[in-house]
Length: 169
Image 1 (spheres, rainbow, N blue to C red):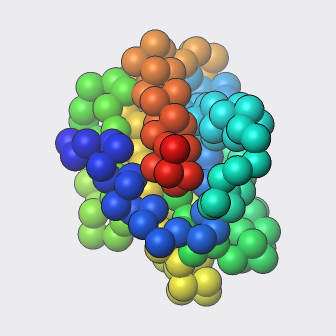
Image 2: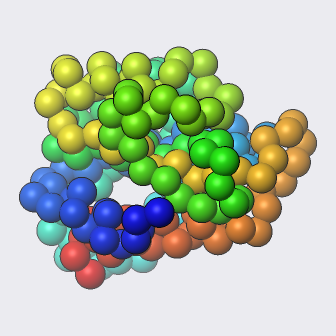
């Protein structure tokens, strides 16, 4: 796994408007990883004093992130980051990155309806933005489970690193 901070710093170079989309279900254990990360990032952004040079807009995609495609297109981000629980056969809480359909093949996504690579490809083609998916390895996505500690920690770390790397703090 590549260093989270290094990977995000490289990705956010020259970013002007960043859209961060949390994907997943809050009733299926670690499938909440994308939503939880966006919640943490929202808390961090609400604490800052407005001095960030970067525009970041958060989107809570839930299990149907495709429903936000119009709002995301209207925002017209230069960089689009999806966050989701992804079964990459790693340890719970490990983070993986992918940006193309070829990289996505072999990963099993969480419970959303439309394959994430299709939405990412559509938005990339219609907006021309850089797209990156950050996957967090779940332990369990069973109905009624809660988020495990390694995934919760990974979500908080990811939110902090997204803020640090995107805003240059």
